[in-house]
Image (cartoon, rainbow, N blue to C red):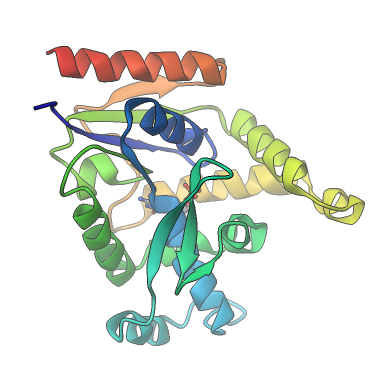
Amino acid sequence: MEMKIIIAIDGHSSCGKSTMAKQLAKQIGYVYVDTGAMYRAVTLYAMRNGMFPDEGIREEELKKAVNNGDIHINFKFNPCTGRPDTYLNNEKVEDEIRQMAVSNRVSLIAALPFVRALLTEQQQAMGKEKGIVMDGRDIGTAVFPQAELKIFVTASAKVRAQRRYDELMGKAKTEEEKAKLNFDEILKNVEERDYLDSHRETSPLKQAKDAVVLDNSEMTIEEQNAWLLERFQEKLNK
Ligand code: DC
């Protein structure tokens, strides 16, 4: 029988993790899971339910919703884009969860231990059968410490902010939306999230000891994909 493994891809925000993870999963016929989208979907739920006062988060209210089982997140493959879309309580929220309003609040949500416990459990269940590529911050350290292949991706903050800017520009539908995009604001968000992701108490972003590092500041998407595929094949041939 063909051997299937778990591939954990962790790293800083906006360094192209999901693009490369998606592409790899497609090439090797594995399931792809974007765990950042799950934290974003919980954030959207909290926003829609008025759980963000001027500062901070109404933690007890969110805990109640989690304990009541009010937040369901799942993915459905979209044949038009060839990628999975994120659903929150059966509503497609793929575009909404990528907006700055969510990006600016998600670190608060990702720092809550009860949210991490819930999502970690769901992620572990998704990887039971192996044959999965999962990207996030704590996949190789907390979700699947036993993953056969762990990649830690990084790139300079400026390069990552530029990529996020280009992505948002590409998605903007009107001139007004485009004019609202501000590179410095995006850079600030990238740097803030780096700090918060690496300094939170529960499962901070850190490189697993047995992870292979990929700095893709100077790499094209094709080069990254080729590099990743090589690492995968090396593992299988071992
Ligand atoms: O990868 P992303 O930018 O979509 O992730 C959104 C946020 O979720 C990011 O600030 C870090 C957090 N996150 C996390 O804490 N753990 C994960 N496994 C994935 C994302």
